Length: 128
Image (cartoon, rainbow, N blue to C red; front, side, top):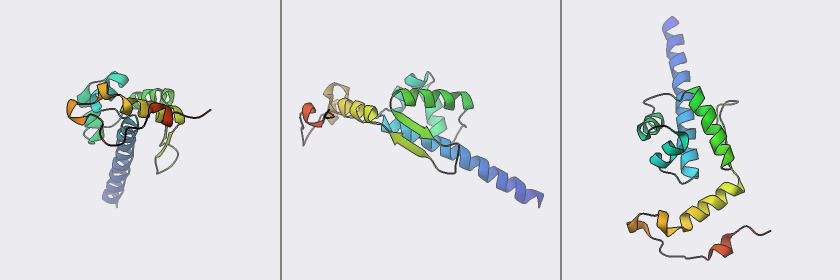
């Protein structure tokens, strides 16, 4: 019976680590940041972000707390601690920032310049 408890504990731990890794990756994506940009925001190396997102290393509490503060400052609210699920709220400031970032051709790779629909920025700005 002891082996079953150990196995269950390891599954639970892996689930929690995976949940936090998914929260990191989803929040990074919501901000339209690559791993390098997210690492710079978090003041860690790019390989650290990659290892967290691929479950090679668990998320440290200090990193997670710092991430939650930085995301909140940018309009992305992440909740993972009170349930088995992940809740991510993307507030209007984050949506506007994302649209602005996507509209900026200077931040795109040269092979990814905007094509297709070219909406004027004033069209998509939040109406007051």
